[in-house]
Structure formats: C-alpha cells, structure tokens
Length: 338
Image (cartoon, one colour):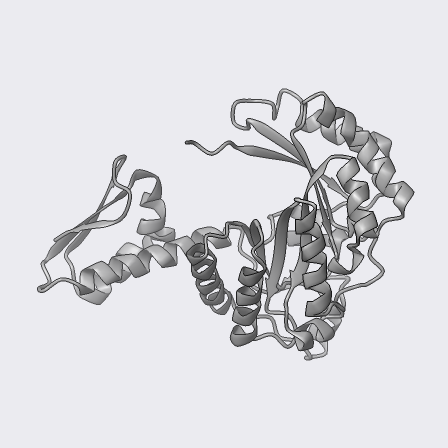
C-alpha cells in the first residue's frame, strides 16, 4: 500500500513555554520568526497551507504542528487559545491531526489531558541525549527517570510519540551518542528525529566556541555516527522521519560553524549504498574488468553517490574499467551482475 503524503502546516512559537536556554538553542535564528503567534498569524498560516498552492494531490493529509517552544510549558490559557484556533479545522476535516513539541519536564497528566481534549494526536519530546554529563554541559536538565515517566504518561493516553536526539553537544562522543540511541530504542517511540549540534549566533554555544571551550564535530564524523544510528533504528523498525535541520535562509545567515548540510540524509544513504556495493564486490571469486549493478529504480541516485562519488570510489579501489548502474522497477534490492 502506498504511504500517504503528509503536509505539515508549521506554527512557530519560538522559546515560548520554556524557562531554560540550552546552549545550542536559538529558535529565532533557526526559524527566522521574531513575533508571537497571534490569531492572525495562526489563521494566515492555515489559510496558506490549506490554499490551492499546497492543497494538491501531492499531499493527501495535513497536520498542524506547533514548533520552536515547549508547548505544554505554556500557561494553560495560552495553550487553549492556540488549540482553539486550530480545532475547528480539525473538526470540519480540513486538517487531519495536530502535533506539539515540548520538554519532557513539562509533561504531567493534567497537561496531557488538556491537549488531548483539543485533538492533539502527536507529542514530540526533545530528548537530545540520555547522558547526564552531556545534558548538564548543554544546560538541559532532565533525568532519565523524568524522561521515562513522561513517556509512560504519553503512551498511557495513546498519543503518537516522537523523540528527538542531537549529537555532537558539549561532552558528547560516539560512545555516548550510541548509548542515547540504544536508550531511545528501548523507549519504543513511534518515530525519531536526529539533529547535529550547530553553532548559531545568539547562543551560549557560540560564546563557548569563541572562547575555545567547544569544538563542533566535523561533517565526516557526524555522518559516520548518524549512519550507525540509522542502521540501529532500521534494525528495530523505528522510523527516522528527519535527519538534520531544515535549510532556511535565517539558519544559513546565523550559522557560524558545525556539520550543516542541506541533505544529510541523502549523504548517509549514499554511504550506506556504497557499503552494500563494496560488500557485493568482495563476495566475487574473481574481479572482472567491468561490473553492473541492478538497483531499485528510485535508488539510482544514492547508489551513484553524491557527485558520482560511489562510482568513482569503486573504479579507483577495484580497478574496474567501467561501473554500470541499471535502475529497475521490479528490483527490490541491489543485485550484482559481474
């Protein structure tokens, strides 16, 4: 069955509801949003995303998502106000769902019952790391016990649960990040988002970077750790719906350092595809002069590699005169024709 496309109508509430300021966080720089979401802004956003430009066969479902703050940390009346603007569109079927993002420490039974009453179906928690030292150095208080308690309450009310991880924070390393990945797998979320730590202006991380107290991970180091994480999540059948920050003009203008790339997932998929190609070649008893791979038609790009890097690497490593890729509709996995 073909998966239905979901159009996300984002409503940004930068830093609202969160008394903490994590060292990496500057929602204004990420989103470019510098004003409080009022009735006009919310309704204009819905009008835009429900209008003819977006309302096409490309997206068969529409979901409103509150991003950029800790929604359940907002005053109760503020939550009701924002959700009351959206609920009529949910009730008349113009949108299909509502999701909110929040901090695990702002989850309790009363807060969840409130958003449930207004039709919220998905709750995303910013976990970032399960390592106590990493969280402390990042200015993000939250014990694993508090996180597990929040997750239990969310699951008890049958919300869809999303968890967000960030690698490369102060004090982080590959071993700690993998431990966080395994911890999240054990929490059995419905989906996950993965982000690299970036140095943005107007953040404490920027001050640490200027003073030599923090060094961001390189792109190659980040890709290697993310590739391993994706393999683990795939092994346990947990969807990773986002890898990397959404490219945005404001983000690019305020990015100082760090492993930013507009298509991190694509680069990882290319590396994973190269691993599969090399594995197939190493299984041969003899090396021919030319080689041909049959791959799924929609995967030709990732097997070719970014700027044909995969093809060039294989030719150089194994000395082939030619490396051919054929995309086939009925091909479900890579096949090697020597």
